[in-house]
Length: 344
Ligand SMILES: [Ca+2]
Ligand SMILES: [Ca+2]
Ligand SMILES: [Ca+2]
Ligand SMILES: [Ca+2]
Image (tube, rainbow, N blue to C red; front, side, top):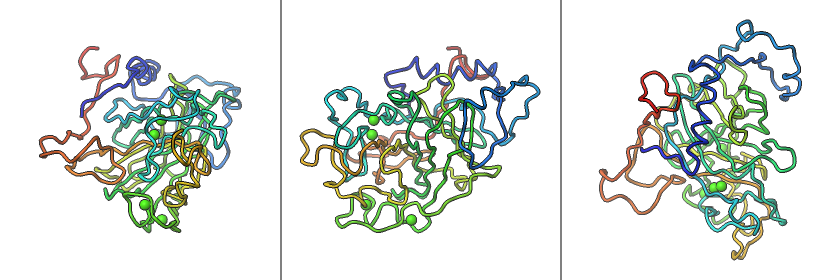
């Protein structure tokens, strides 16, 4: 898979390189961190006001993620800021197919930049998968990131999500497990009766019903990227999700329903009740499913010649497997390059 940098290559370079610069090109985290506690809400002000010990003497949590060194895959998403002033989108929202592009409030259709995903990225190391969610901006009222940001993983590759990991209102650039929730769908109700499309009669399944404790040595973490405040990064320990080598992944921003028990949303809300962000649509404006955005899902560690439900797909089935993109992760070197990478 060829790595693309969308519309902001410089931004992406800064995103992943500044932590390296800070760390002196060493994966070891040198920024301070408090021992993680649950369920205390994060308080950045308190952390910042605490007397700072020299980095070398601080006690680092050995279970904390490191730095995502490379981007292995990218999922571009519709940039809805272009038509935000017109309170509408022109593409990206296919409600019955579970593809959402609705970063607007209900009824008033006020634009929410901290809910508008423009890219998802995946990185990994020997312990963690790292998911970076790039939004168009910060919250217009508080300057933060105000939503539930999530990763949905289809680990049995059937088009139905198996795990969803959510980080509520992330703040601070140090990894934390505070406000991070890990959920699993053990009874395969996510996706309803037909994973390809919204069920014709409302589905009463329980979505992601199983809460996985997230306070052990193998946990899921969140932070806001040090160099770019509109990027939320979620690190998921491989063993927390069964250490999969192949899966599909997509990302979410949800400041609307925020209820993983109602996944898939298009099975639990009719199109009419959900509303539409498309101005010419009969169900415009947004109603019960506002303030939400997601991406399609991309394969990781494998490739297929057919479309799995919710998968990114640009057209009909390839004529042969030769036309299937190679989706085995391909490392990309950032500037300044880690050891072994070519010069920038
Ligand atoms: Ca979208
Ligand atoms: Ca978007
Ligand atoms: Ca369905
Ligand atoms: Ca379920």
